[in-house]
Length: 478
Ligand code: FAD
Image (tube, rainbow, N blue to C red; front, side):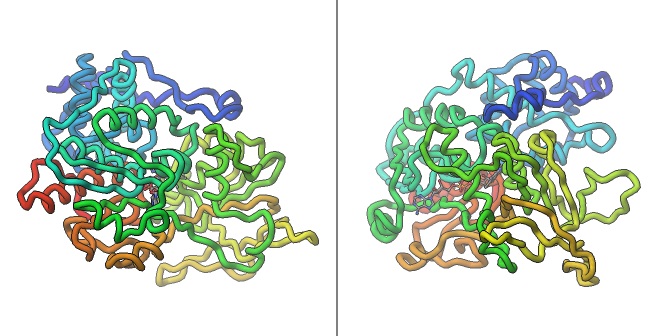
C-alpha cells in the first residue's frame, strides 16, 4: 500500500543526475550518475497506487509499477527486483534507455510532474547488479524441443530467455561478432555501456542458452536448413534498412546514412579497429530528430565537431514549444535526449531540397526550404523560401524502412508486407513453425516493445510445440 499522502508531501520531481556536459563529452561513458538512494525512495513515495494504474497499460510489458514503487519506498529492494523481473527480462536496459511511456500514462501527471518511474526502475536494476540478484534460472527439466532464435537484439534475447527457462534447448544465431543487436553497436555507450549487456548474457549462458555469433542465417546456414534442424525458429532480425533521401547531390562525398556513421564509432569504443567517419572540426548537419539523430548529435560532439545542426521537416513538438506557440500539434519530431543538452542547433519545418557540392565533389551545403503543410496534411517545401546551410558532414537519420528480405523470402515461405515480415495473431509467419518478433515484425520501434514481443513470441512457440495453452506470459499481441 503506497503512502497515501506521498504525492502531497513530495511534489517535486527529481530527475536523474547527469555528469556535467563539458566533462561527459570528453568520453563515451554513461551520461547519468547514480541517484542517491534516499532520493529514489522519496521519489517512489510520490506513486499514488491508483485504483486503475494507467502506467500498467502505458507499459507494453505491463510492468507492475505501483508494486515496486511501494517496495522501493520501504527500502525492500530485493523484493522490488523480483517484482520487476516478473514482467521484464532486462530492466537494466529499459531503466536506462526506454522513453518511458509509463510516465506519460502516470495519473499524477495530470496536475503534477509524473513519478520518476524510469529512474526507480534504473535504481532497482543497479541494486540487482551490485548485489548479484541475478542468479541463473535453470529449467527443472529439458522438454526435448529445440528452438533457433535468429538475431540477438532485445527481442531475440527475451524470447530465448523465456524459452530456455521453460525447458527448451535454445540456440541464438547472430551474424555480428558480439551479442546484443542494436543495443551493442547501434546505441552509443553514453546511453548504454556494454558491460550491462555482458552481465545479462552471462546469466543467460549459465541458464543454458547457447549463442552462435558470426553466423548469418541465409548465407552461412540457409533458412530452410535451419528450419529443418529445429522444431521452431524465431526470427528477430530487426529492421535495419535506413531511409535515404534521393534528392539532387545525394552522391556527393560526406553524406552518410546515420548507422554508417554510428556503428563504426561504437565498434571503436568497444575496442575494434574499424575505420570511422570523423566529425572532428567539421560542420555537421543531421537530418531527422529521433533517437538515432540524437545519438548522432552526442557522438559528433564527442568527436569534436565544429558545429552540429539538426533539421526536422515538421513542427516543434508541444512539449518543447514556447507557451505562445499555437495548438494543434503533430507527433513528436524531436525526442528530448541527453544529447540535446550537450549543444547544437535544432531547426524545425526545414525541408532539404538539394545537397550542394564543391569542385572536389564534397558536400559544402544543403539547400533547405521552409516546410509547408498542405490542406490534406501532407508536407511540401514552400517555394521562394530556399536558403543554404553550410555543412561538410551530413548524416541521414530519417528512420528505417524495414527488413532485409532477400534471403528469408527466397529460402522460405515467409512474406514481406509493407517492409516487415508478415505474421498472424500468434506471431507465426506463413511458414509453420517460423515466428517473428521485434522490429522485424513491427517495424523500427523501441526496446520495450522488442522485449514484450520476445516474451509473447516465446509463449506462442510454447503453445505451438506443446499443443496446449502456455503458462508463460503474453504481454502484447502483434
Ligand atoms: P535488433 O536490435 O535490430 O537486433 C537484430 C539482430 O539480428 C542484429 O544483431 C542483427 O545483426 C541480427 N541479424 C539480422 N539478420 C541476421 C541473420 N540473417 N542472421 C543472424 N543474425 C541476424 N529504443 C529505445 O527504446 N530507446 C532508445 O534510446 C533507442 N535508441 C536507438 C538508437 C538507435 C541509433 C537505433 C538505431 C535504435 C534505437 N532504439 C531505441 C530502437 C531499438 O534499438 C530497437 O527497437 C530494438 O533494438 C529492436 O530490437 P530487435 O531485437 O527487434 O532487433
